[in-house]
Length: 474
Ligand code: BG6
Image 1 (tube, rainbow, N blue to C red):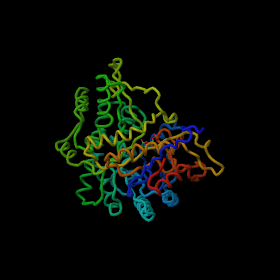
Image 2: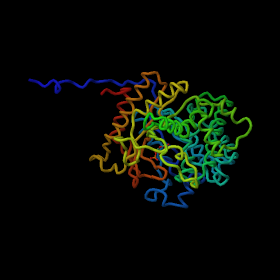
Image 3: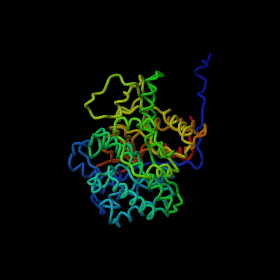
Image 4: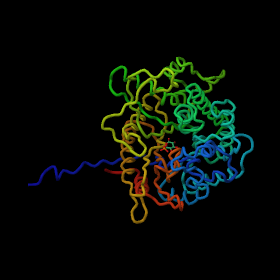
């Protein structure tokens, strides 16, 4: 007799995505370009910090060479085309375009970015350009970086210059990538330059980043540009340990501090009251000028990029924080490790695929279903060489599983009416990653750092097939 459980076929489901869905990858200038001291580029905080403290970077590797996109962009873009990309996000290095942050524009940078944009378009890949990805020009950091209102003005000049130079061909612009990260890294938790730990200064930096975004959006619209402008935020849904009121309140405050702090002003033009209450009680309200709040209210984004890597698990604070220690958001809640969680052990991040769905449904229900796309999602893995086959191609089935499981939840959100318009993996080819340098590899394309040779991983070919089929069946 045949065992019915053996013969029963697993029910197959097709996950079909819209024909005009954006498929591609994301990157940033510092992490990919290299040529840090070539082509007239000025120093940014990463170049400078490395000179001061090379030990802060994994294996002492700097961003000086990175993945050498500055020289190899034609080859790289041809490979993007081969892997089916219809869109690609990169950032313009502020200190490449303006070596001193303001003032003289670097002609070589204009040529380089024109070449990249034109090459992408020639290959049928729409360029998505981000203006700020953690890379403050050193000359402006010396003037206070995002703590300074003059730097906000300098950023607006940089943004306008980019719109003028490239806006005839580029229709998707983003003012910032993950603007909360320089706040956390540079002013709270000591993982970016200038390594300050000071809540009030962190708040000023956050406020100026939000203001600068609204001002850039205002300029974009005043200039009569025809595309869309948005911001890219890392949204980390806050899940409470339990339904106990204290756990729920801890999750709400974590959400206000880490997600709504940027999401609300960017999409709704307002700030969450819970956040304002904390800032007032900590005497940490930022310096503002008359008219700022109105400007922020009136210049919200057209399009939202969502970077999603991990959830945030939160519980009520168990013990009183040290009153003498610097105030940190975690004074108001504790982090919580969900029993049985799935982990990416290399990055130390929990993998929770349904989070992508929860974000999209939250946007649908509470943020007017703003048009959005997944602007980053991905899995950094250490020691990928061990998965190379005889042709040198990394057999990264774990990355395929990771992407596929997230896409299923994204598909579910689309079926329920989310206006998510695309998916970009972090990242196209392995790239340099802030303090982790080349420890964890994220790309569809592997890089041999000694030779700069590119080799497509199994996931790259899988993604190509997915794009051609506009989905997958499983
Ligand atoms: C995002 C950033 O935070 O995550 C990228 O936009 C970054 O710049 C990526 O590289 C992955 O994080 P990490 O720290 O592992 O490089």
